[in-house]
Image (cartoon, rainbow over all chains, first blue to last red; front, side):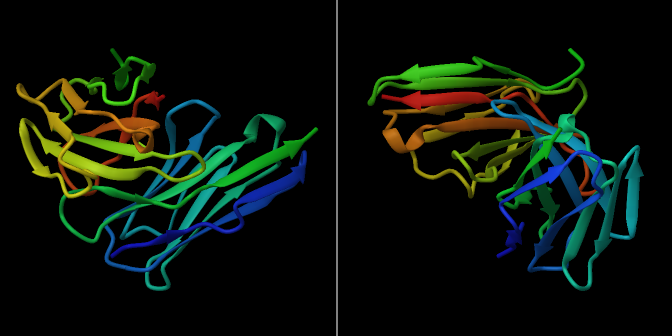
Length: 113
Length: 114
């Protein structure tokens, strides 16, 4: 059974800091990995999708990497801002062909002004 | 609409009451998923549809939970005889067909059973 772990559960950093959020998964037979953002009381916003054949994806100040063989992904946030404060969830698609996502518990990020 | 739409946004039910939660996916999206998110946890898979066919319902926690998508578009998740442990946010997601595609989520329905 696929398991996804995100450590630590919470993180507080001063504004402007570059930071790395980690995600690990137990079964490397995945189709893709997605990073999501969730604001309190809201749904999930997709940030980046990395296919199993890719090593990284970039969108603005965000960069996500994938090392499928070691079962790890990182989300890099450059020059953090208070507006980045949210919970960041990592989810993997696979193994199995029905495309369901297995999520970690998320990392709650607080960026202090 | 442009995104996945869920209704109602909030639902308070008395224990034992039946509830129905609605999901309107992105137009043209073949795949539709339901997830349950307890407080402080990541979403957990409930069930998956490809068009009108329910291909995986392995995540439904009991036979009180039932989902349908009769015309391959709008889906309804029904919970019968609600219990306090059913209190959670229910999220719906849709995607185009295939295992490599991106999932888009709705805002969710927060169910509170009192």
